[in-house]
Amino acid sequence: MTSRSLAALVEHGSCYAGVLAEILFAVDRSYMMEDEFEGDNRPTATVTLSESNFGRYPMGNDLTRLETRFLGEPESVDKAKAAIGEALEAEEADELGLVTMILDDIDWDDEIRIFMEERASFSPDAMTGMEANLRFAGPETMETRIFGRLTAWQNWIFNRPNAVGEDGALQRYGTGVRGEYNMERV
Amino acid sequence: MTKVIDFQTDPSKYHHWKVEYDGPVATVYMDVDENAGLFDGYKLKLNSYDLGVDIELSDVVQRMRFEHPEVKTVVMKSGKEQVFCAGANIRMLGGAAHSHKVNFCKFTNETRNTFEAAEADSGQKWIAAVKGACAGGGYELALACNHIMLTDDSTSSVALPEVPLLAVLPGTGGLTRVTDKRKVRRDRADIFCSIEEGVKGKRAVDWRLVDEVIPNSKFDETVDERAREFAANSTKADVEKGIKLTPLNRTIDDKGVHYDLVEVEVDRDARKATITLAGPEADAPSSTDELFAQGADGYMLKLARELDDAILHMRLNEMEIGLWVFRTQGDPEKVVEHENMLLANEDFWLAGEILQYWKRVL
Image (cartoon, rainbow over all chains, first blue to last red; front, side, top):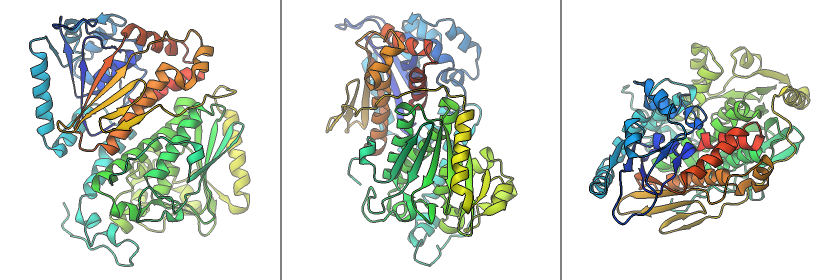
């Protein structure tokens, strides 16, 4: 768990299978190579699902990553399940909704470069907030409440002068003088 | 804070924790060395903790699972006379950058979740034996244990004094576990979280803040009795012996972090890190004996440990890297074989633990 933007590249020669395929469903976006790339003789990019992608590694919300991914289309989980054990090439993986985008030799470098440059240019605060909200769809559990709700409020308070300002309570702790608070309550 | 924070440690390097193993029961003593804080400028008085203390606890929890699978009950105690734990060190928090506070809280939260889940995941039940003041993060440590025992004397209490004292929250799961796990009535929780002195004795049990209150004279004996009882009723299979979590083969340099199976390449100009995971070279172990013999060198466990460490390292030590790009290279069929070997032998403790570990890493 991290407040960084996460992406996965499914290149030729890669081995996103079972537990490692789980990475594709944990990241914010995934890009997969389609068809042959000039001068690249590695085995064609594939994604292979295993039984483990359907229950062995639940998220904090107690759903699998695929269930969370397909919250609005549960039938897609069943379709993916029917493909267990198959080495799925780009078009098939795309069809099943397992990757964000498939790209051929002509588009790969440019698309990836543009994505990365754009990502690096955004405000890290806005990215953290956006990703934390988009990543954890679905039901609340004690774990999601701790990481999503309690932590977010704490981090907000950690930025407020009432706690961390010069006259805030954290700085004054141990001095015998109480913190001075801005009493505007929002 | 430019020094590299290392998440790898082992019992020979601990400053703050001591563990005693006695068959199915282990006792973990928190005995913080006040002069061994991770950074300068504060003393870890009264068993208060910083990230360094928590890195050791996390190591204790992890080794309990892999090196001591014979343990069914873990008792958390204080190694100090008057205090169980005073929580996170306030001077450390006061002096830390915002980003360090955030990362500190995240890591401590993950450690609490891990020993809390050890009962459901591996049949290792953590219980807290509270003697002396147990406040803030100290009570949060106890809350993450699945049974809390409090001694009944004039100085021992449980408390969440953050709001009145510090103007922050009991943010390591405190507020959430009081309502969601202990199911304390919300008006009582409101009182409990707004008083500095906390709650002791019978009221602590009545309000469900602890599970039992025991007279001081019988405390140690009752704790031991309870620990044995939980162990005897545990559904965890008997395991004779664990494996050794040997040190990772890791190099950190300007270009990134390098392990046997994980390669982290840092591009500071682009604010990007590329994390490449290698597939297995060797075939999957053919038997649980072979899996056990491979121990920490087995592919699935080694990859999980390296990835876990890489993520922690990047999170704390490379904060300006905003984008992590994952890559893999290897034979997908072999990955499936290695994973299937574990899935087919889930009942074998080590296979189960490795799969549980992957759940935590992901």
